[in-house]
Length: 239
Image 1 (tube, rainbow, N blue to C red):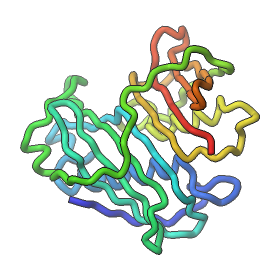
Image 2 (cartoon, helix red, strand yellow; image 1 turned 135 degrees about the horizontal axis):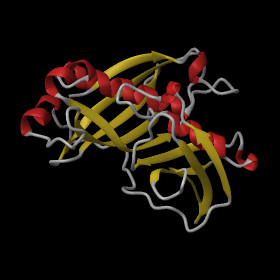
Image 3 (cartoon, rainbow, N blue to C red; image 1 turned 90 degrees about the horizontal axis):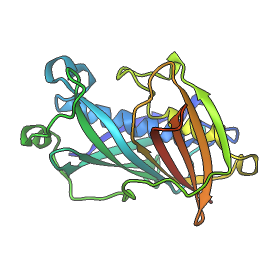
Image 4 (cartoon, one colour; image 1 turned 30 degrees about the horizontal axis):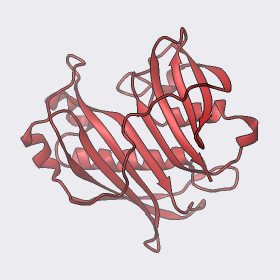
């Protein structure tokens, strides 16, 4: 099953050059994924009945062309299948002419909202979503920290960052990247970006941000204030 959703690139979706941002692209992909889930009975408003909430484990976005403010784009998503724990979902973003402007791949885990534990993915759940034999992009799997960092920072977690799952919403991690990015990279084109979400971030926490470069790739790690727990790793390439 392929699910589509159309968006107009608005003010909040563009950068200083009026181009669609990575944060907006991730938001579009999440919205169309939510439309798919809701359409088959496992969406946000179905949680009181199913007790199933989808938590994002990893996502990769690759941008080929940046739509501008005022353009219309269409996000497309489909399920690539699952095992007992992880569900795999891919995406495309196309402009009004049908050109592929961005692609995405993601891994999700089902959580039982009553207990907070992982829920087993049954054949009934996955049959509802359907499985397509198509791959838009490959994820790199579990990311690892670089050997060293060249910049550090801190971020206070506020109520505005928290979503209905009571943790920092997935798109804010791209904001954290922008906060710690060295001045020499400000405004640089980031067209290949991957996020590995390891431990959720809750309201009131202070997190540490770390930036490093290794083997031509750039990394941002997000850790607890005492640096003992890793919340997430972001890996990205500079065009």
